Structures are given as C-alpha cells and as structure tokens.
Amino acid sequence: MKSTRKTKVLGISSGGGHWIQLLRLRPAFADCDLTLVTVRHGYRSDIGNDAIKFRVISDANRTNKLGLVRTAFSVFWVLLLERPDVVISTGAAPGYFAMRVGKLLGAKTIWVDSIANVDELSLSGQQAGKYADLWLTQWPHLAGNPAPVFRGNVL
Amino acid sequence: MIFVTVGSDVPFDRLVRVIDDWAGATGRTDVFAQIGKTDYKPAHLAYCSLLEPTEFSKRFAAASMIIAHAGMGTILSALESGKPILVMPRKGSLGETRNEHQIATAKRLLDLGKVSVAFDETELRSRLDHLDQVTPREKITPYASDELISALRDFISRA
Image (cartoon, rainbow over all chains, first blue to last red; front, side, top):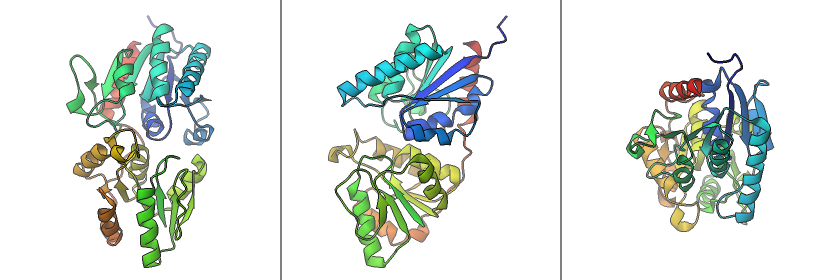
C-alpha cells in the first residue's frame, strides 16, 4: 500500500534547449509534488503555475572546473533540502551531478538525453546514464542494450 | 518582424553577419537580433546581446519569422508557436559549439519536415532572398509525445 503523500519529483536542467525540453515533460508530473531547478532566475516566468516550486542553481559546463565545483555543491545542497523521491534531468552538467547525488540520497533517477544529441549521446549523458535508474534517449538509433532505451521524444 | 537569435550569449557572428549584410542590401528594417557577447556590431539590425526570458518571449511572440542557430530550445519554441523557422547550424570545427551536433540536428529535423535549413552562409543568403519559401510547419503541442509522457508516468508511479 502506498502512502497518500504525493511523490516528490525534482526536475533539473541547465538553460536553453535543456530547460525547454524539461518543461515539455510536465504532464508526466501532474500527480506529483514538483520542484523545477535551473540556472536562470528569469526562467520562472516560463512556468506560470504557482503549484510548482522553482529554484535556481549556479551553472557551468565542463570547460570551467571551478564553476563545475560550484554547480556540484549547489546541486548537492538543493537535493539535501528537497529530498525528492525522483530526480529527472534533460541535461547537462547540473543534471549529471543531480543523478549522482540523487542516487546517493536514495532517490530514483531519470536521465532524458537531449533530443539535440542525434548522432551520439552527449558526454554528460554517457556519464550520467550510468547513475540513472531510467536512462532514455530520444532517438531510436541511439538505443543500446540494455540502455539507453527509446520511449518517444519531446516533439 | 523577423526575430534572429543565436540562442544564448555564445556568439554566432557567421549567422548575424549574413543577415546584417542582407538587411543592408535590401533595406529590411524589421529585424531584431539577439547576438550574444560579441565584438561584432551589426550595422543594419536592431540588436542586443542577451534578452531576459520575459523580453525574449515577447519578441518571439511578436515575430512572424524566426532565424536562428540550430538549437533545440529555439526550434521547439518556434514549433510550439507555429512560426516559420530558418536555422543555420553552428559548427564545432569553427569553435562555434562543442561538436557537430547542430549539423546532425538540422539534418534530422529537415528530414522530418520541421525546419528550413541553411547549412552555410551562401545558402543562408539565398534563403534570405526567398524568405517566402520558409513556410510555417505543423504546430506542435507544448508537451512531449504521449509515448514519452506515459513512460515517465509509469516509472514515477512505481518509484
């Protein structure tokens, strides 16, 4: 018997296309207690739903080592505060850290590799996928055995 | 109004330069461009380096056509709003992005009939000269495919 508490989902991404793709997954979280985490305060206006909690973390890509440490730390902090049941990311670096920290804290993790990775999985995706309980690619030809799996795309 | 965006603050001068030259040559004055942090100053376009998301949405909504790098954020936004979009992919070989994923994205989405594509500056200029051929594509919903949504729902319900 499941408790009546809503499943707590934390969706996290960096900016631009990663964020837009994360927003497009929202119907999947309709029955959940949802927190969205991204890298620009201005993205709050994209949500338009007071029931969704919004948090901002420091961004970095893999060319900026100090920035990555900062991102890792802020992801760790947000996950400690939120203690989600499920962590889901569409990329990139913040999502990678969220997969690892999520696992550490006992959450179920989902990595949805960006639809922009058409010919091969991204570097963050290849790394993050190992820590994902559900590892998805958005292109059938990139599906592997046993993972990542193809189960549709954000289009 | 044509809205031009390079997607982020990472410059893509190769794209902006062609549009700037074209606007100068044809006298088009209804072009606004978000060009990133770059030293290049367009002579014939209204521009800024990076818009705040609310301002970006306003400009985007007001535009009748989008010209952009081949970033999925911009492409998805254009498809959601049913606006015609012409993209030119960034090249990893020129240091415009991390690898050649934009070229691959552009090819796939071209095959799926989702976008118009110019793969280089020459092609971009000729597409600009025939903008009426850049037509709106089938509008998409604001949400991912049912297949993906239900796969995620299933997983979450078992979590």
